[in-house]
Each structure stands twice: as structure tokens, then as C-alpha cells.
Amino acid sequence: MNCVEYGQVVVKELSQALGRIDPEKADEFVKLVMNAEEVFCAGAGRSGFQVKGFAMRLMHMGVKSYVVGETCTPNIKEDGLLVVCSGSGTTKSLVNHANKAKEVGAKIALITINPESTIAKLADVVIEIPCPSPKSAKQGDIISVQPMGSLFEQSEGIFMDIAIRMLMDKKGLDSDTMFGRHANME
Image (cartoon, rainbow, N blue to C red; front, side, top):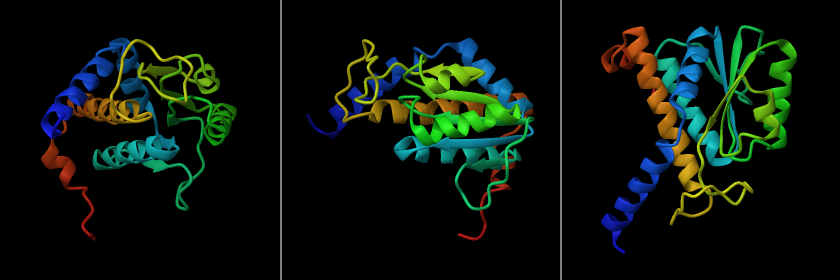
């Protein structure tokens, strides 16, 4: 296959994966973000990269958002929301973050392959994206030509961008308004 053909396959895979997200759960996710005083974003590996992009877009919207583990991240409180991206839903450091959030009364949203995971049992909303991954026993029926968990990682990033679009609609924001908060010390 050439680049264009692989691209077509990947787009088809993404369409299949994103098409399996429960719209009601997506609405719940957006409501949790809207109602949170602060949003804390956590993920490991490539999922961590994706959730950092979500934190950045929230900041562009004027939402107080933080990446867990950064030196300038404050403590989470009961009016906060922890957004966790974890294919397995069992990564030890992320389980610890979820336990701490639950302990203080904060809300938890999980984006995962595994809706039966440790973090899913703590979460207020679980966004399941049923992609194949070596980190999950639950493989679903979507087949991917991509390596390892790439389809999930791409899908979670696109889902969070879709959630941003939904939040923009609810808050009456557009890209021009958001660009006013874009970094100017690059």
C-alpha cells in the first residue's frame, strides 16, 4: 500500500471507532467539564500527549486546566474534574490520581478501551472507545492495521477535540476568541 491507501484505511478505522462512542456519555462528559471549577488532565505515554492537547484547548476557552504531574499544577478539590486517558484503565499512577480525586470528592471522567477497569469503577462518566490494543483483553471487533494502541490514542484525541467543539457551541465561542488566549511567547 502507498501513503494515500494507508491514509484511507486509517480514516475508516477512526470512523468506526468514533462511531461507537455513546452520544449520551459524550454529553455527560461535556457537562462535567462545563460544571467543573478546574479540570485536571492525566494520562501516560501517548495518551498523556493527547490529554495535554485537551488541557491546552480548555485553556484557550478560558477554563482553568492543568496537566497532572507538572510542577505548577495545584491540588484538586471537590469542585474539580479529573479527566483520565488510559486505554487499560489500570495504569498504577493514574489509578492513584483517580483515588485521590475520589477521596477529595472531585468528579472523574475516563476515556478508555476498558469500561470494566479499576479507574472506570471510580469514574462518574466513562467514554468507551472499543479499539484493539495489547494493553486490553477486550479487543472488540474493530481491526486495525496500525501498531499497538495507535487507533485508540488517535481516537481519544479526536474525541476530545469533538468535546471542545461541543463546549464551544454551548459557550458561544469561536476560534478567533480562543486564539486570543494562544501563547504569545513562542
